[in-house]
Image 1: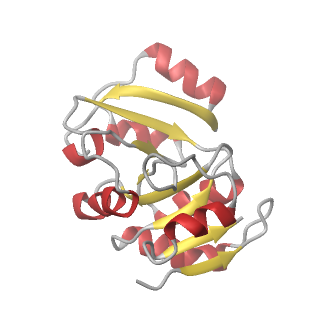
Image 2: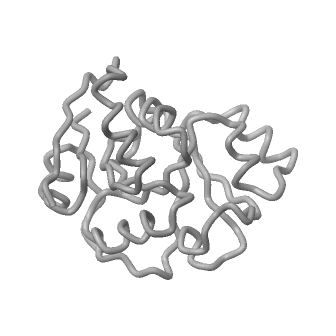
Length: 174
């Protein structure tokens, strides 16, 4: 697989540069992208085949659930059977940001995302590139760290590229 690199300004990413990456996510591809913590490896969380590609690219065991990333709080209602008042307050207070919350999963979330568990982990990243990419994709994005399973989580484009070149459709340098 040929991996394409897209370079964007991390503080002011351009939509036109991220559109092909967002389209790849919608169409079942894999995209590595920066978040406020580490680089993530994303796929359309509603597409079980796309999500399976994450496990293959990383060499990750399929019994290890994934975090689903959203760009808008209202997306949680599609992915969760219920949102407790406490979870609602935490979302309002700390999102976007590096807080992951667990919810009872809706039937819309494929079992491959949750490793067959009844809960789904959801977060809303506070990185301009991640946020815009997910928003442009228009789908929730399952995204663990963008590294080979067992290796340290990458915090730079260079580390991500070294692990995933040739295994993903796009890597965003941002």
